[in-house]
Image (cartoon, rainbow, N blue to C red; front, side, top):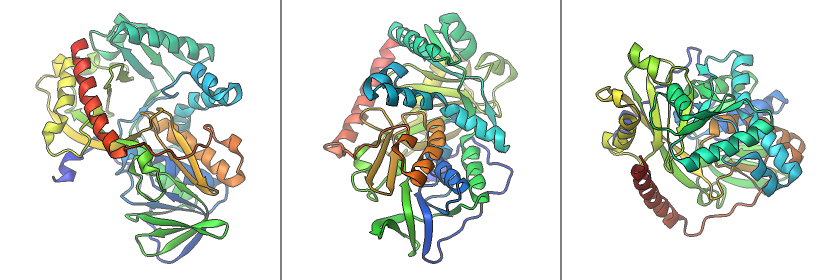
Length: 428
């Protein structure tokens, strides 16, 4: 398969020059080494450099080639779980702090874009969780109650209101979280890299971290460049692209592929009826689809794809069928972009922070909220590296727990996705 032919995201690159690539030409010693140049790694590196730390970022691909640049650009605050669940499971103090952190993740993205004047298209008109069953409507009502009690700018939608905002007939209701919105994720990733480089972060791309070992009170990172980076602390920000660098980390995650399509630019008439106010939408199906409009007026729609990498355009056919089911008027409109990225699911649907040894941190598991979550998490990780205070971290540090029979688990997830997709079809 010619991967480049099937990996053509619709997102525009910034007009500004990208940050310079700074190869690892000789052994280096820094305060912090970050493995992974996606949103989590770059946000952490930028925050640490702003604190005066010397930082080296090691990225195996080119910037923006991972999920950070290939996602749908939906900025969704919160977590999969609502505030009262977090308090019940983490205790009053930790649960409340976690809910407060989750409430502000979208702010971290939009505030950074505005404050630093980043060349990133963005629209903050909210995120809609559209409900297609009465059970989903009841869940939306409960979520609305809990977040409104905490002062969030959210509102419950009836079926007619949901249809007017989405352009889709058939939803029974929905929930609008006005804190959310959309961005160009590729531009945001590249601009965050530029911002980090401007405060002294050295970024090497096309270089893989191949080994980690203790070096006195710090760590030595071996690289495919043949040089080493010695650091007081290491943050492994590889998420769904994790390998054997940190023992057990990859086997604690179920990697999934998120497939996306983008239409040709919509006509003025379609623009007026499909997402006329620019919200992002995720539906309530077991295998959800999510959609938004791109800055140049295309419909962008995504969802789960095959467990292995795509082989042909047919691997995106399920998304085109979903698009026509939602928007029959798009029958015959060309699909001009198809792409995919890898995301990671954790068994408990929560992000995990691990510190298998002192000074070695790894974070994984975004559950569909990675843009806001990982951007907001970076400064917290930098604080923890600087002071070592666990209170700086929104989530408690947990041990790495590899999933039993991990290879079979992935096969099972593939079968589950097919089963859930069939059940969703019966409910249409």
